Image 1 (cartoon, rainbow, N blue to C red):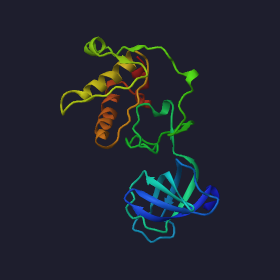
Image 2: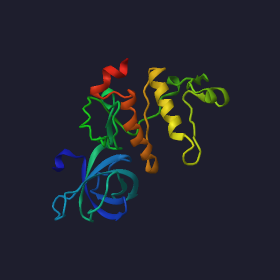
Image 3: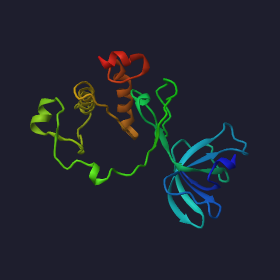
Image 4: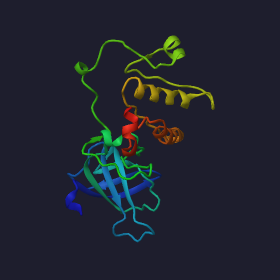
Length: 222
């Protein structure tokens, strides 16, 4: 099993989702490399297969990583395999209308995501020559936004408000207008409590013909 990986280590400390892993000399994984921790050789109630991401070099062949999956059942001494690259997720048309976690695994119960292209979740920023230096308004189609507080293409916008004031509705309208008026696609990334909105969008968008699962592509193109 070890021949397929760039290096093999073992877990020496676990603090919640954070773990320290000891590797052999000369096989220290790079920052942002993915490590796979398994329960191979351990008697556990259910097999463990967790992907973690290296965040810090502690010295003396030890790295600190954060788990991207639940770590219940993990103990010190379990083997950790350096995958030799960062976490990669599928991209392209097969991902439209799908809901996936940070590892690129589908969580919408619509089957596997079959794609020929995978990109790492950590990529270098576009070079300055590839970036636009002109200020251009992003037409949302929402009158009060375009008139009073226009959005800038390529900019960042923050929505602040209490419960029930319409933050999710506004985002849903933006997704609709980007798809139907601009012919573009939207990516919604959520963490923590905002995962609920991601679930809502994954449930509502196919019914509004805004996403492209195989059974609805012809309808969505009209």
